[in-house]
Length: 127
Image (cartoon, rainbow, N blue to C red; front, side, top):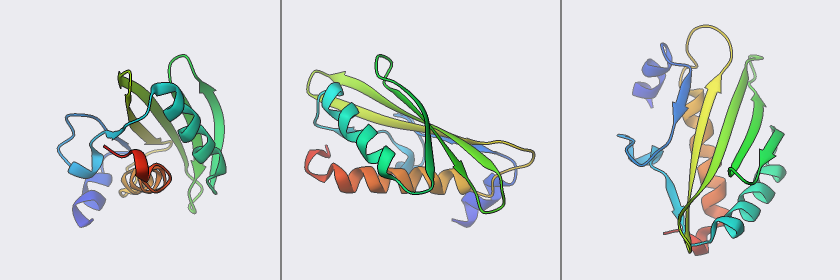
């Protein structure tokens, strides 16, 4: 966690993906079709406390959320549901803080928090 805070001094964004060096930032794969995964992810994100849903684009599989930190900074979070094959989907998250300087690792912690909630909800479908 100290490493994330130090990296966060300079960087004010964090993203997940297939090629992420940090194993916690790898794409999360679920054994659900894209449509089913979309329904589950959007319903879960809408219920999360502290997050405001800005918009969702089902055709692209993108959900944009906003979160305000205790210090008053705004974080823009994009959750993407991607079809890997007809019965498997991946969820990726990009989080960026508005404002100058870094985020002290808060984007990293937000991504882990969202993944933790999604994994809890979709535990039966985790690949």
